[in-house]
Image (cartoon, rainbow, N blue to C red; front, top):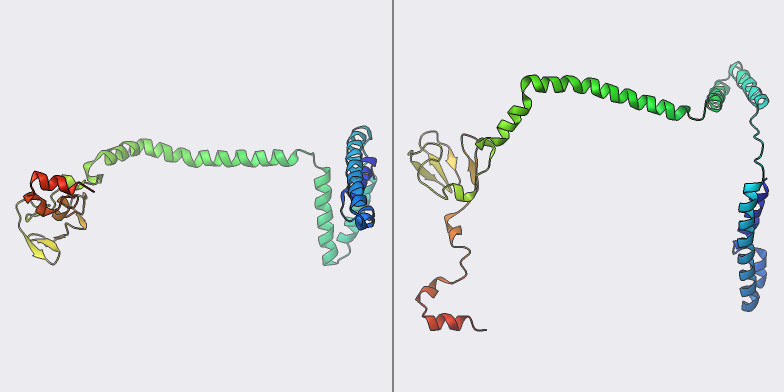
Length: 237
């Protein structure tokens, strides 16, 4: 164990509420206060010392040496030739660990970058024919023409009739009342002016009602007979 690790362990014990010093000092509040403050100060000093020692102390020699790896490889070979399925599985695990240890530190990052570059190249190969076909077939021009076309626009309620006896699709053709709808005498198509309908050219006509023209008038209908004095009286609280 390194010296810095030992110092950190002692500091952790001093900061723990279950250390023997604090347990023994619980019988008296004054003793407990002094013990707690002392343990905290000592732990702080030990932590600072551990940081300084960690920078000075030389690193520990690794237990992973060429001899230990050779011994592990011999164990894997023995497991593999034993004929036992479980031991063979363990031999495969050991071989994979040995390959991981023997590989360079940045081999995983390089492999990941290689896979990412390969995916980008495949995306470009699949996207390039699509872009060429769009240019040949003039897809962009078609999309712009469709977006600008009147057939794709929804009409506002003030742009169409709220109610009419002639067919919206066949000007001049009469319509008959059918429940809450109107039916054209030519193609028998029904039109509901309250819920809205779609014309033959694809235009969507929103729903509306003639009664909605006066729904926002706040003055009651009988107010048309009021005089100026009566109207002024209605504005008083």
